[in-house]
Length: 396
Image (cartoon, rainbow, N blue to C red; front, side, top):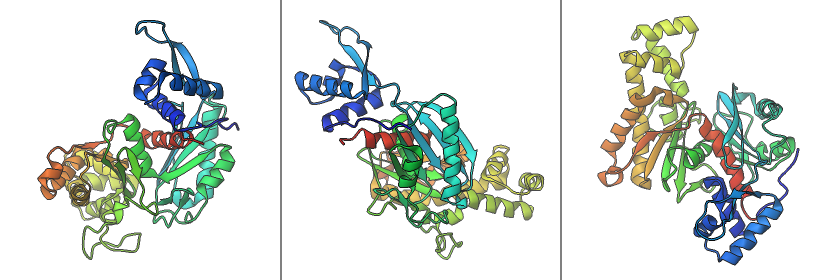
């Protein structure tokens, strides 16, 4: 498979490539307004990028008086692969250089099967996207996994819900298989980057992105840049204690947020409610399917089932308790709630908001929006494409 033939030679070229990625085609005059370069220096850098094939001329720009210049855009043949590996499913998408999703596949998958089995499935999905005519090959791939990642090496580190993944060289292995550069990050960081590029956080510089699924994590964006911490474990809020001497958690501690509210915890509690006869609706669903999921709780709640509503509200209070501490500490401009459990919708959001606004200082919450993400499952794959394009659109 082909690889990108060139990288930007300096910071000016990198800045131009990212402007074209985030804003689409620009005229030379528009680029000049965005970057701090003289007209002659800008012309030199644009011409060098045209020579590399990373950008192309794209018709004449609108007249601004005088001679009309050509629009410049990223090369239309560039293709990025975004892969979002969750605990129970995997999303794979191909994008163009402007991160527009051209094709997107979702399949169920159990991350506990280990990296070899999971990557066989990922590679099969990538081949299906290629076979559909969307890409001849990939110029780079961004991968998200549901656990802490040592970012420079692209290696998962002691992920609680990923047995067999600790120390696996994800970046190296997939780069060899795909034949292109690969970057690896925690899945919630990718969700934050996706919402930042094309979702609800487009104008936010400092925000928190909380993903509630099988586990719970938080992407921390500071000055428009993801903060990963010293060892890549920043934002692992699912293992903050919410109940002293509470339920045992997969991490080995007790009372963690994840043990009390996550997709799996909600399913567990819903089944207990059903068996105890506290919800006829959940009991009927359990009898029909043999097990319950967060989607069953959402459906029961939408029908007005009081037990299901209380499960969601209790989970929202626990989540809001943790987010309130983060808000008081970090003072973000926005909190985004995403992940599979957001199918619980505004009942969950209302409970989280109530707890945060009640618990945090008014100075931190007075103008703080707490909103659901806009992109759903696309957030992670767009974030993956953003991750690898940030790498490739940096000076070589």
